[in-house]
Image 1 (tube, rainbow, N blue to C red):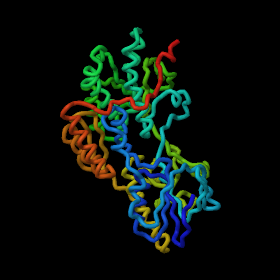
Image 2: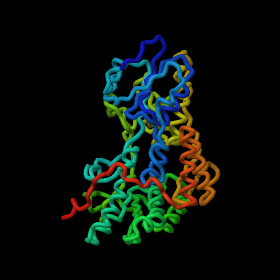
Image 3: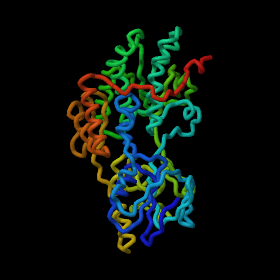
Image 4: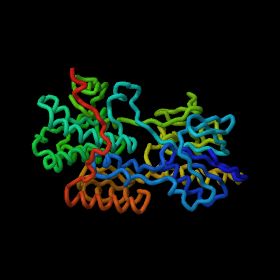
Length: 430
């Protein structure tokens, strides 16, 4: 792996997400050697993946080179690799480019789509947890309309223009709203010879309300916004299968669709070597103590989505969002220095800064600690917060300019089939 030897403690960080970057930046001026490992050479701003999927943004506007994060940091190294296994007994890791020892190991691997063991859904549904997956979805959406133009079978045409999104959390709500706006403002201009009024956006939620992690007020308003946009919201409906053509549920309800987007859950992205039953918590996350140490392994830490820190306030662990990861990364940077210096560690206390979701143009819901609001003001707050947390000045400028242009012109310039997904709905017909 060609990492130089040093007398300074070596801290290996696996994952360049929100938590991994926050930790790396906190250690930038400390007397330690830091090695950041990720299977991609860029950080992804995941909250805006749905805009890549729907042609609102190009992928390079929400991605940032990890090497650029480390520019100017002494004793910092980045390696593009996939970690295969952790060997706690020898304090080393096996990767796709070789082995590496560590003094302290930090897992910031994030999460991945959870299909809850349903292999049929995993095979045929579309996920949206990475830039490649978002580009696949963008291509499929556009290819479906191109294919709808060519078919004489009106059942097939309807299925190609029927979209089913499973999961009524922020990802599902935001994607449904974006698709509804495309149907209203873009499709009639792009496809004048296609009756795009027949396009349907169905949002399927297993519980009795959308955004069930937010307030009742936010949930009700989000549903109202979506219905005004023409989205069909189905609550208390659990999807059981999808064969590429028909979506089945626990009830008699079915959907004929060429596109099922699965946004119904995530699970921790664990690595072999730390997969013992006593370590794994609900959601395939790693049990950690109040200092983010993995239970039973004082030199191994986990932060962000992969970490399950159970408290009285959060018996299921902190929410799998950016803020807990960032806060844990910053504190762990300080705690690792304390640990090296033989000082007591500071326990992590999550400071909930609220949650929000956008439903479309001038429509968003926002829950702060003591203040809840919806509508245009919430939409502007949502935009400001997301611009603020984007990494890189260029990315902020590009995203802002795109948003202003899209708002004025009611357009999405990035609706391009750069990399065809090449999925033919006809192959699933009887």
